[in-house]
Each structure stands twice: as structure tokens, then as C-alpha cells.
Amino acid sequence: MNTRLIVGLTVLAGVVVLLINGLMSRGGDAIELNGVEVREYQGQNLSSVQDFRENSIKGPQFIDVDTYSLKISGLVESPGSYTYDEIVDSNTRYSKVVTLYCVEGWDVTILWEGLLFSDVAAGAGPLSEATVIILYAEDGYSTSFPIEYLMENDIIIAYKMNDITLPPERGFPFQLVAESKWGYKWIKWITEIEFSNDTDYEGYWESRGYSNSGDLDGSLFD
Ligand SMILES: Nc1nc2c(c(=O)[nH]1)N[C@H]1C(S)=C(S)[C@@H](COP(=O)(O)O)O[C@H]1N2
Ligand SMILES: [Mo]
Image 1 (tube, rainbow, N blue to C red):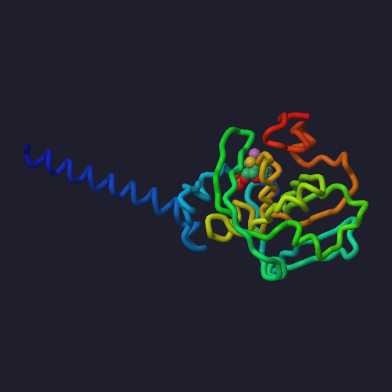
Image 2 (tube, helix red, strand yellow):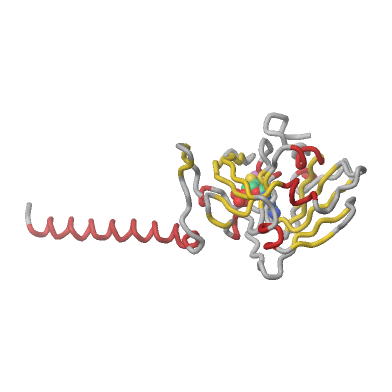
């Protein structure tokens, strides 16, 4: 090989290394602030926090934890508002690997950590007339569930995924892990839990034709 070829190849290799480094550090930045993401759990490979597609109705919401409150309203004995710390510190923490399936055809398998929805809601004392729970979010999004689904299935409100605090894009402070339901039922940036008896209520995507139950094994449209 002549010298010019060797020099040329060396320069090319250097450029490739720089490019790869650049791409890798770009992808990692936002996440490393909160710690190191776990990618394997009990022998199971997990998806990455970055494998989600960002397609929220108004883009990421940036919620200030110091001013945030979660409101519990409607058909309950004691409506109230709780801070992030009140919710996270006063309830038992659970973790579980659950897969989110979006109707667009992608899915992510994540180790979620959070609180039982039923524990968070129990303090407010749901009234016996309540049959439906409507969840509202910072971006105006909403979705609803039959009360039994959220109260009787160990459904989690997550504040961590793969062992890092939910990044803003992924729903900080809380995302509902709506197991066995399509991704559009996994509401992010939750701000209010309303107990209701409005069985006709339709959330954002539900009012645009998607099934109200959102069951993965049911039909996609009502
Ligand atoms: N507040 C809020 N929550 C939301 C959405 C949204 O637009 N706003 N999109 C839903 C949809 S359609 C999916 S598939 C999941 C996926 O989350 P991602 O946007 O973090 O990928 O979030 C759900 N939760
Ligand atoms: Mo979705």
C-alpha cells in the first residue's frame, strides 16, 4: 500500500470514530442527568426510554415539580390536591415489566416503578355511585376507565421507567401503566383523577373514533 492510501484510510477511520461518538453522546444526554437506564431485568431485555415515538397531541409537557399537584375530584368523600412528594412518599412502591403497544404499530417493554392506582385514590374515599374514572393531563388530553379496571387490577401510576425518573417527554411526573390496553389509554402528565358516573365519557382519541375500552384484544374502533 502506498503512503497516501494509508494516510487516507487513517483519516477516514478517525472521522468514523468521531461520528459514532457524536451520535452516541447525543442520544444519551437527557437521560444521564437522572441516572443510568436499566436495559435488562431478571433475564428479560428491556426497550429503551428512547425507543418511544414522540407523538403526543401537543408535544412534551414540562411540569415543575415544585408547583405540581394531583387533584382528586368528583364522586368522592374528600376531594383534594396532593404534591408529588405526598404521593410518592406515602404509598407503597411497586415495579413491574409491562409492554406498551401503540396503534401505530410499535411497542416498548419497560420496567415501570410506581404506586398502585387504588392506593393513591383510596384516601379520597370513592362514593358508591362512582362507576367511571376520568383522568386528565397537562396538555388537555384525557381518557376514562370503568372504576373496577383501575381499582381492582393492581394498575400502576408510574414515576420511573427502567430505573430513571420519567423524563418530561415520557410523562413526568406520572404516566398510567394501563396494562392490557392500547397506548392511548396510557395517559402521561396526569393532573387530575375524577370519579364520575358518566359512562358515555370519551377521552381525546376515544372521541375521535378509537374504542372506549381500549382493550388490546378487542376491536380498535367502536
Ligand atoms: N397526556 C398525554 N398522554 C398520552 C398521549 C398524549 O398525547 N398526551 N399519547 C398517548 C399515546 S397515543 C401513546 S401510544 C402513549 C405513548 O407514549 P409516548 O408519546 O411517550 O411515546 O402515550 C399516550 N399518553
Ligand atoms: Mo399511540
